[in-house]
Length: 401
Image (cartoon, rainbow, N blue to C red; front, side, top):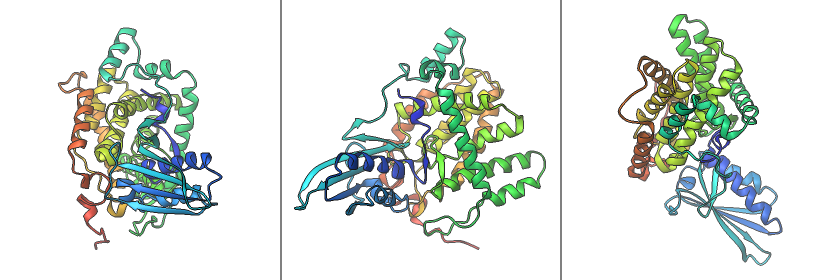
């Protein structure tokens, strides 16, 4: 299993799979073919179906801005390895193809070339949470200590940067107003939610603040702002909102937040390794569902939960999103994506409370839910997996008064 650095990628939205991944692939291909006279780029499957809404063409154009580039859209063609496929062709002065290469954007900003993984080498030999829990019990350790042992002490500097970026996204998003780009004319709501929350008292104030934090990051992502995948851009608002909430309410130290990020990253890593975090492959259950599991685990650790209670919270985070479709209206990471981040953040708080009320023991394990989520995703119709052909995407989503 890879480093949790693969889960937390810092970059610009709106989509890790449709914006970050294609951009990285384009940069790799151009670096190897700078003497070509012009290029062709063919987008397949989900990349083509929702690419315009996700700014895929913009991301690729930016890389090839000094060269003639033709973009071809093939939304009905799905290559076998993954629904997010992109092919580049380099042409010479006679318009003959010099070289061609196909990449797959597999989620969270990761890419593979013709099915060969392009990420860093494996550093975790244990790839099931049950086995990691056994390690924790045998060694008297916490989940974040397992991460530290495998990643090395440098991971804390990395996670400090991750949290700083998340926190800045919240602060920036809370002060931005106006409409989001893309044609839906969806107004930003985080600033208004924050103003209302400031005037509330008690539990209503705290919950309203949580919503504001999640909206702030999700709206920054939708507007192409700088965010952190956790585990994807479409689900990037859940973890930072929950961490910001606990830090503010319980006056937590940054080091506690870093440790929570380590545990959350481990949970996301397990889902990515054993199933998928790609909405195009398994639906939004793999994106928002995984983000909720990560946030639920982090919250339970911050509240002093045992490793078994942390596992239980993570299990609920994913279990209660099983079957969630990925059906973005107009291919934009806005409706229903932004609200889903706020609702998943609230669920994470509930999972934390429920897990802490228990002894951490339950019938269905986190590992079993991960397997179930993956199979459910495989069984879902392609219309409900980031193609904008089914579900809520069928509607124009015009303002209703």
